[in-house]
Length: 255
Ligand SMILES: NC(=O)c1ccc[n+]([C@@H]2O[C@H](COP(=O)([O-])OP(=O)(O)OC[C@H]3O[C@@H](n4cnc5c(N)ncnc54)[C@H](OP(=O)(O)O)[C@@H]3O)[C@@H](O)[C@H]2O)c1
Image (cartoon, rainbow, N blue to C red; front, side, top):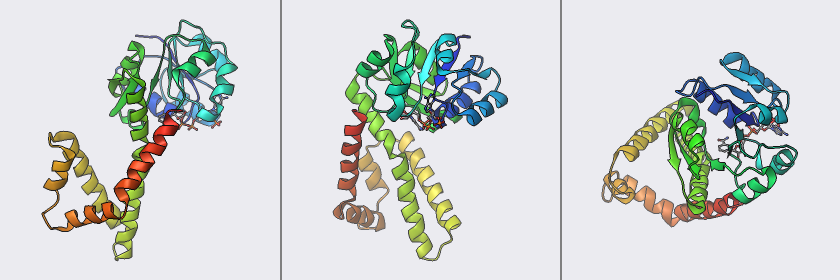
């Protein structure tokens, strides 16, 4: 497989994909980057084999066999409608909240899909929802961990919404760390303790066949401290706040 992958938008997620891709079974594929983020594009091109920087966004479209769209939603319409897409070349859009109807209208491309790669593509350990499961995209994201075929819009929007919890995860750990500091732990001690505990919980979550409720009970002695913490978190509106946040993010993910 030697078809060139082009990227429109060379930011955080493009850099993670390109670095992961180059270390993967798809590493032989040439990569062509849009030139706008000059420093990052130059860094990727200098440090990775088979990565080059195009002279313009149009140059990416003209020379690549497949194009990944990775600009921010706010500039998407202006960027995409300014370009001439080859209708037969497949397009993978990573742009949050931009649905197929608008993508088709702005690009004229028929073979397109949306995907939600997270920064873990860089270590080739991500699970990437791909809607619909365009074979070219499944191949790329399969090499970056696991490509998850998604067949309907509601499921894709649900994954997009759940992916928005990364910041909240760190936010929760931050609150707990700061609380630990206030009790006299150093920041490093609190962080190391929480990091190990959450990493172990993630391993349990991935490896266990138990329901979440059962896992919670298994990790909460009856009448004990864990049971008390979750009961008080729920009573104070913690779980309701999380559900409300997800509902609100979903409305945005739906465009
Ligand atoms: N980060 C993630 O984990 C993640 C995950 C899934 C999906 N996404 C989606 O991927 C897209 C990119 O996210 P990101 O986090 O990578 O954002 P980012 O770091 O801000 O990257 C966006 C890039 O687009 C460039 N750009 C702006 N205008 C352009 C133009 N006219 N032509 C070419 N490039 C242009 C920006 O260049 P300048 O820096 O020069 O402005 C920037 O390098 C977003 O739509 C986001 O929703 C991100």
